[in-house]
Image (cartoon, rainbow, N blue to C red; front, side, top):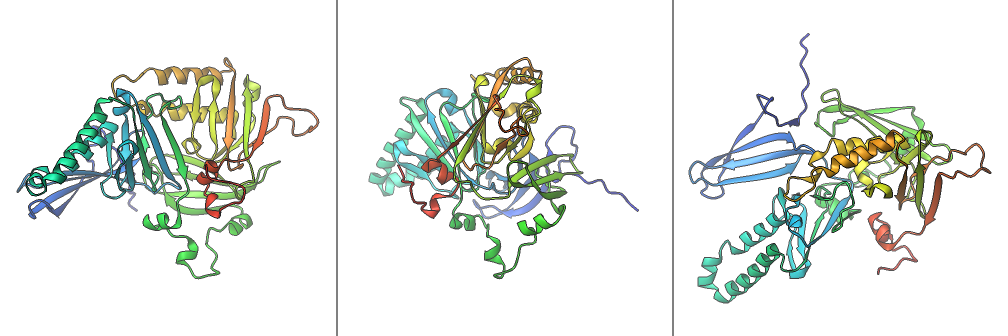
Length: 441
């Protein structure tokens, strides 16, 4: 019997890898229509995700082209980014765009539609430079044939160039229905003072544009999906084959429905990859969105507070005011852990992601390490903090240390139920139902 060592499909691009497995394909050159060569490389960008790098070159005319495509699945939700560009550091922010990213500059009433450009890793200034290059590409011929239109384009290009000099602040908006767009935060891990991110539920048309269809759309009516909730509830543990989110190699995922005491049923999923060793745990609520959102304030002042159970859903944001830390719902994902486990996961994610602050000049490269040291002090019981968990969907839970004695208050835990705003309902996809009582502002 011959044993073949399984390798990850997406491997780190390092000097120690003698054979990066580049695939070459003969392709038609779109410039001179001769045959050129396209090279494909499946790799991992450190601190980001799996990607497919594509490079085309033509020996006949010298034409070259480079593209980047995400190597993983689409995100569960779309994403919108809104950046207020006021400083040079904002122009240097790194931006990862997918094919489905639309770019808008409201100050100039300028828009680049989704799927009109290929995905790329660039900067804010690079987005403006690419727009200028696209508008000026055929200006010489346009000046000869349509001088009036060429003059208007020259005026608009001059306005775009002024954006790069920062004569006045301006706004950049990115929307990506695939959820695979990212804007660097130069203040990480602190909250970004000039950039806001909002996730949103895709519409049916947007899902179809991505090639995503529901079970009802592709299966006969009445057929129960093989991984339905009813089957999960009846089985002890359900196991199925999937792909590792890190290296895309085949892996096993275990699923189990369990009851969280004093809360509700949840679905726990665990994936282990034998190829790269990656392990992940996810928790999803077994029910729908709750009528109201919930906000927990958990005081962690010593080792005795670390054992408190916490269920954090994917829609739950976490913040630690004493450390000026804010973490979005999908940064840590859904998980069932303890207060100590939540802090350790935050530290490990930041420690393993030094590229979060990028390489732009003027960024505080030592700030992240100082922040990790503060988190270590919290984990050692030397610093008291408050963990704030805010879940608009109401599907998160924090254990009270006095569950056995309801009459005894838990001074370390504060719970607040609140009515969601219109924007929060929009992110959860509830406004599509035209829920009565909410009006768009």
